[in-house]
Image 1 (cartoon, one colour):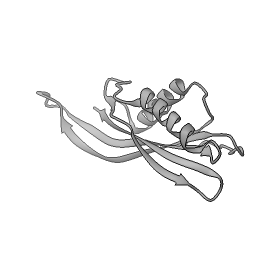
Image 2 (cartoon, one colour):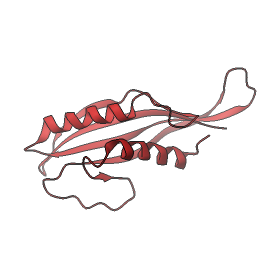
Image 3 (cartoon, one colour):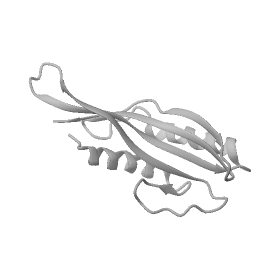
Image 4 (cartoon, one colour):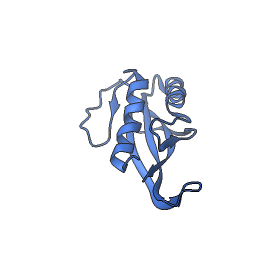
Length: 135
């Protein structure tokens, strides 16, 4: 029965525990200073919408929110593509098809290439879709 705040907290917590300090993690709304040449990931919690749903034979309505935990993987251009895709695979192992709370479910992580930016970083995104029911 997680609220949006609890859902965001649980998803970030899952990532942090599984990530095991491979790189720094820049969590949304927490100050982070980028270090030159040091790979890191950052997160954004993005709810898409909430609607009322009935679950099986229950007459009790639930609020169901869908959304994604959006993770940006940033690696220095010299390490770039190989390291970034290795990190993406680890994120998939941590986050795909999990049920960390009774009414919170994740699906298969979608990886997308953003490519090089003008500041010396290679970027990938990992989008972890979820549904969260609040009674």
